[in-house]
Image 1 (tube, one colour):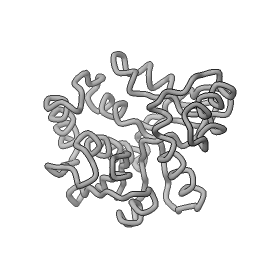
Image 2: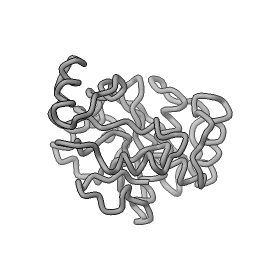
Image 3: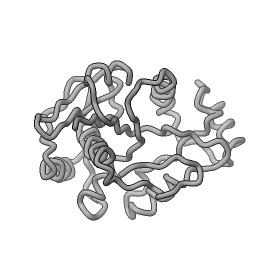
Image 4: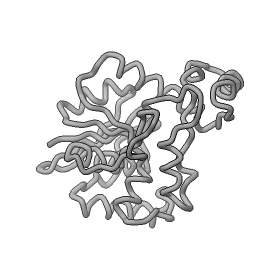
Length: 218
């Protein structure tokens, strides 16, 4: 069983390709299509990016993820409305988002637009591999049995997350590849952990039966 966990990074995308017999391999590519091609055949891709954008209201998956992360709920951004994601100016995107969902759009969410479009357009090509949305902080919380209060950009937070992944057999490289930061590498590792759980049919869906059909997997 081979899986790929994916997170955004400065260089585009970072992926951790992981199997039960090989060391974890970290790769960086400018587009999601190039990253998955470079990783080679995998059974599941877990990616930290919204895959199903809301039409008229916020997503149940994000509300459930926040509920499960007391003290860390701010790590879960609201997905932008489908009608807003092609806007290239923040003011226009914010207006369209408010019209569709009644919610304003954060600068952080607007910053994800190019990545969201990249994945949306790639999925439209029918890439032939199951792709599921994950949320690394939710994965780490499930792995640890509690939300991790230590920030991953600080040494103690990074060390704890690395140790948690290592305990599951995901031994990450000492340093991230060029174009990515250490927290990106850790998040891609967590995405790989959840991707394996999806492949094994042991992952959780947040929520279990979302009315909008757009879960986050943990």
